[in-house]
Length: 81
Length: 210
Image (tube, rainbow over all chains, first blue to last red; front, side):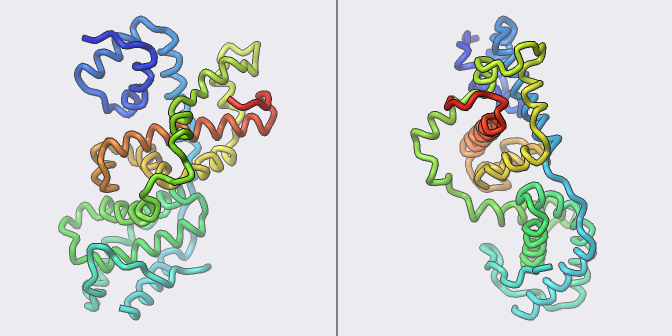
């Protein structure tokens, strides 16, 4: 196990949030977080931003007539082939 | 409504449109039920309803051309999503040139957490960083997302919406995992920077450069 500096720990935050860390990479970060409150706060904020953006991604139901317009686009493309 | 009337050439299939009516009917049976999912993904990637619809139409036209190559009809939705995202990503595959190396180093170091902590815009708050985020409305978040060049926005939106692993993202966008990781990192940093800039414009924080 290699003790991490805060700077090294921060570079692994996004990998941690994305569940992409494995083995020693993950263990070293968790060991650092267990004794560094400042990094715990920063990691929590990174997660808050992720969740905040996810909840606010634009979302719209498909407009009326979409299926018909897609069919026409397919017809037109068929004519060009 | 404007409709897509020009079709880009498929990089994988160039042998023309299947003319057979049965093929077209089979295609519609499989593909049309997924238009809603495709449209929602397109809105998230493109930001506007019109661009999203154009993208869905273009995706379907390209999918029909490539239909003979679909080996697993049960995986049609993933196949369609892949075509759709590649239509956006491949046009903007390269890292934007306007981001010079110096800018990238500054971007990699950018920390919204540190800036908010140092600026302390709400001195009486017990949840300073959470209260900072709560200042932004949906439209401001949408603009911040659209400020992301597609090379960053596509992998990040796919991560958020489809919950894909780095390996799955790398396969879908056909680029190395290292590229995916750096795009996700920088995409998030650009988003943080956009939120900070928005807070400056609105006077939530003082008007100084980080």
